[in-house]
Length: 253
Image (cartoon, rainbow, N blue to C red; front, side):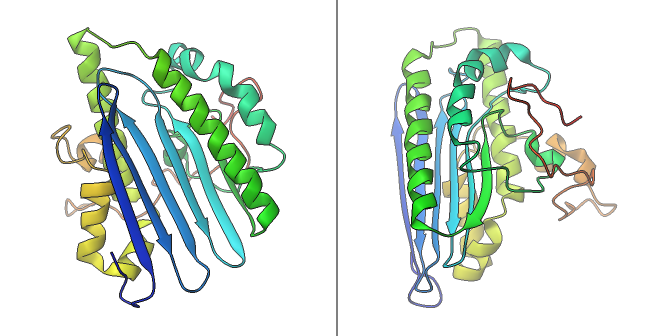
């Protein structure tokens, strides 16, 4: 897809890989002004409770903004079982990059719920050295996720499969409504096309995996007229420092 300026290209690829991967998709944007974007995600089939692989990279000539994570399908603040199952063994992986790619500043409490104890959320002055570090982290995190994928066991309990599917739909619903990259897409290709890319490509499944709406999942965002509040945060709380300790325990409450 080409942007309105006739110079910026948006390249999109999507695959499915049964029996474990429901969707693997990638959006890359290359602007004529040095802007580069990668939005790469992998979503498991509902029969698996695997985390969602998430890599969101934005780079301009001066600034780079990064989120790299294995987004938890289920809660890791209260659910120790899920945290132990997938993240305890990966804490050394985060520690490898903690000083090179430090916490990037304020992150809303609502957004934190969708991140894991090993999330890399950072921003830095664009440099080739840090881009090389980031690429190394990307490869390491993807290899770690692929290992979890190899070891993943198919769920046969119908109620747990339904719970996995609803958890993924809730995640997709949040991302489709509140993803910060939407404004960039709207500027590049217009509101209608941006909504199509977001709902039918980046977060495909939001229209098919469940019937609940954004306000069903997040009623605190309901305005008096029934519309969705456009604020990023209703709680008004953000984390300037990393809200997990070195053991992966949440310390932001």
